[in-house]
Image (cartoon, rainbow, N blue to C red; front, top):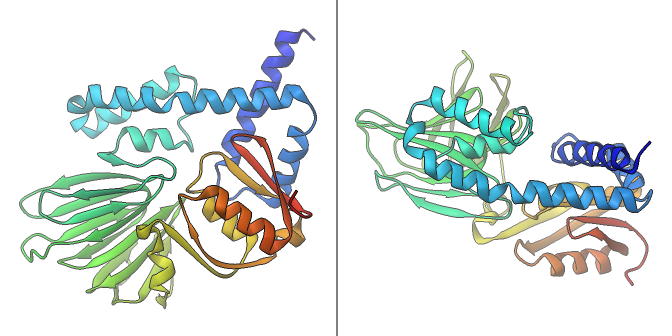
Length: 315
């Protein structure tokens, strides 16, 4: 095998790991396997860094393309076709990638970003990390389509024009209120801060949520309505994350939504260690230091984009 073919093989493996690690259903065993793969030698480390640089470098070209073609993308079919062509041209698969959502959106945020938007009707939308929405305003209805991520809505009251948020196989309908909608893979969660909202999915009866109540739906099926903690649920709006007696695996999974690259936790015992605290989203190093000293773990940077947490005292 030549050096070139070896480099190509390593790059293919690194690319496969990159896209697998973006998935929400990545398993602890896969994280351990990735860490073992990366630790095999310099070839794996170089390939991993090349993949990170390449995919990071595609962000700005994609934004430039979208701005240049925005006027032509008003027709959804044309926008889909053009976005798919762009992705295929740079060698990325269309399935399970955030780029298509971002290219066909009216408003987007990248990893760790937050964006507050005033809509044409005077309502306000705040987007959380890695989010994308389409906006359609008409004389009879105000429509938002959540393509990915999470948004908090402060809706101006207008009985003649209902405000509808569509996400996955369901939708939320209001006249004037404050609520959030989060979409992760096939599941959507709705949480209400003020007022009353109607949530529908599939052909069943809708449910009505009041402040402090939430519901999830998936595959056109509504789950049971339940309460939630607004302090935790809406903390991201103040650039904070609140955790109360949650496993480290859940904490790191949430932090990964806001930080570039990946943080991995090795070992079941460490993954199950309980964490409580209020963390500042924009203070990455302070959060890692707090975890090191409170949980007696060691943080090791393999690349600027990969941090591994393992048992052992911080150095």
